Image (cartoon, rainbow, N blue to C red; front, side):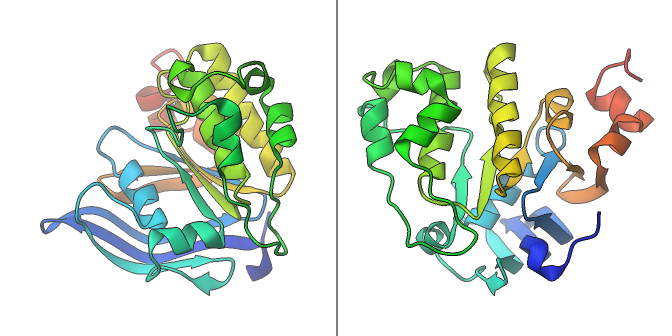
Length: 248
């Protein structure tokens, strides 16, 4: 399906990320459309987390980052992380976005509400409970008392209350039981149907292919394959490397 410029929420051009002179990511172009889920897959060390951290303007190290990052038509690559967040670029990192000494309800009460703007939906706490009923059941529990899956749901919930234009999810299924993997990823499909754009970094390729619209395969920080998820499932290279020998 073709998309116009108005349908593009995130556009990346010439993104390069280096650590101590070593190139970790080198992307010519990347885009995410409105209401689209773009999956980013690849082996460990392929540059997936480096990519989303660069988009969010955050890193554990001191990388050198160059290139253009455009959110909703506005260039933001020179902005600090907190300004990108306020503009609607929200990252839920692999380590989760949860305060461990606060209850579920308190975690959801501390998320700031952005100013109303076209194309941004600010979710209420009640809507978060509707998406993740388990959080309502555990609303009095501290973040530290939650399971990995519950913490992931809470991290996504906090991000949704900040009115994202684009949600960056870094390995949301890692360490989760299969039932919770399906629940978390299927919720991303529900969010996309409401118009939210999502960039999903995921090692569980089989699960990701059930919910994403397009996939990007990274190798050594570069895009080596890109296309509709259905086409990836028919590619013997993907089947053998990521879906198992039986699928191949």
